[in-house]
Amino acid sequence: MDSSSRKRGRPKLCVTKEVLEEHRTQKRLQNAARRGQGQPPGHLRLQFLKVLRRTCEATIVAVMEGEGWYYNCCPRCARKVQTTEGKYYCTFCSKEAGDFKPRFRLTVRVEDSTAQTTFTLFNKEAEQIVGIPVDKIIDELPEGTNIAEIPPVIRNIIGKRCVFDVKINEYNTVCGYEDYTVFRLKLSHQTEQASTSNKDNTDNSKKQRVN
Image (cartoon, rainbow, N blue to C red; front, top):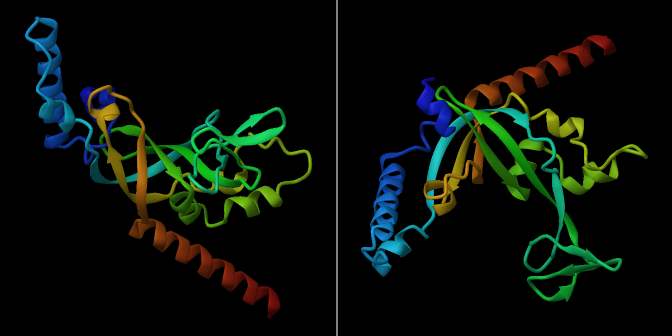
């Protein structure tokens, strides 16, 4: 992994020619505006609002501490609800949200052969890789557990290799934020084979104990 790849912090399949070209174009527009050549044309401003979608195969190397692992979401819009005077309220819907539901929000560090970067997985994708619904994890936490700590069952995803489909927007290409949202994933063949092997070993151990 070269120093420039480490500095950018983006897996090689995310840093495509199209993404880099948008970044260069935006820089040229910003420089032109600073030189007093006016604002960029409207169609050029709008092109940076589009969301690019790219695929990257990478290994999860960490679940980020301090980011939390779930949030209480509004059942209508899925946005985070706020607590106000002991009541749960959705500012987006401008309504009380007493019927909120917990929803996964995992921030993970991933790595491929060129760099490390940060991915965020929401409910569907997170449950797919964790294997257990978020409400079941909460219900089965031992009494007195610090709910903010990452449960062991979630830490078990470290080391799994997946093919991630991620969104890349202007916050990544223009502002340089290193956090990509995953909208689809599937386990790589390596992880699937390892999972199958572990299951077979467990089944064999059970048979030996029975015999």
